[in-house]
Image (tube, rainbow, N blue to C red; front, top):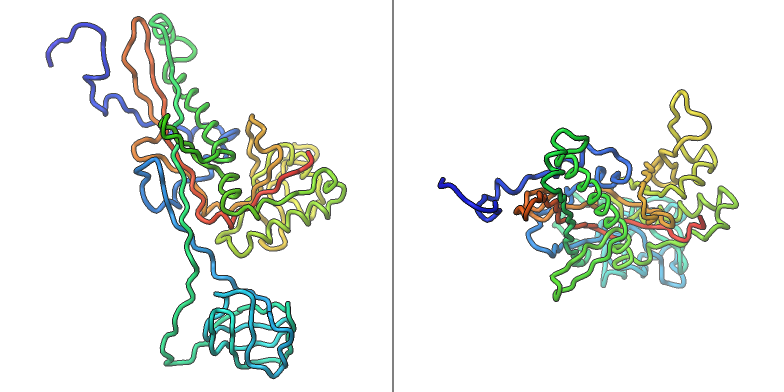
Length: 384
């Protein structure tokens, strides 16, 4: 290679020389303030992120319960009308409120259900009674019926760029060679600051698009719920709810009821420090803590004993912005995640030197995905 004179420039360097991937470094950072990043991954993404806009389709779980619409259904009747289409299909076994079980023989228009009695004492129904699908009973050799399919909804989000620069004078750069903090440590410090911002975005970011400024931002957990499942934003009831343990438990269990039919895996609770401070005093048979041998008093709550899912993990999100001061999330972690734009995971590169200076850019471009927003919920108005 011929000799070059003048200021060094990035123009003559290869991408490999310039681009140093540092995405894995966050795994070695302490948990506080990036706990969420360490728990989540991009496993729920079905393909690479190749554009600033990522799209996916969501399909709800098939419902298993419906209410009877008829004013009366005699105990000897063999048909009924229900209020929800898509619950029943031919050969489904359903249960009436008092225990009688029946087999569906025909479904017309999704809500007109014909059936035959299977077992138990014949039971009459009235409007508002709930019937529940509990199984299937297909005869041997039967020709396959048409399936019940639920509709899809197309969702999307945008990527967001997180960027900063380490800038040192020539003298600082030389002094730091044997000083307390070299350029590599400064880069790591900047990356840690940026990852904290990324976590805050996963919690509270809004999805925006500004074509004129070539600016896109990613929507986080709260935005996705507010946009696609606003009914899953539950009012905790303010400070008055804390007056009795049973009131707190009721509010939390109401939230678990909302996600019960949507979640695939056992959900997890994300809480902030202010909520944790009061929640750890809730009755002992509901919350579980882990105490070291030398610990005194009540430790940080690790699990909550829910009425639907049993013990669920509680994760304390330590963030400095106060975003979790009035929020508690209950989420299915198998359905949420974040991922880097292709080849844009955390990286650093040295920029062209300007005068007597040394500069490194730290950059990452990421996006958040929530497969089924209805499978997640948040509580607000915590009264803290």
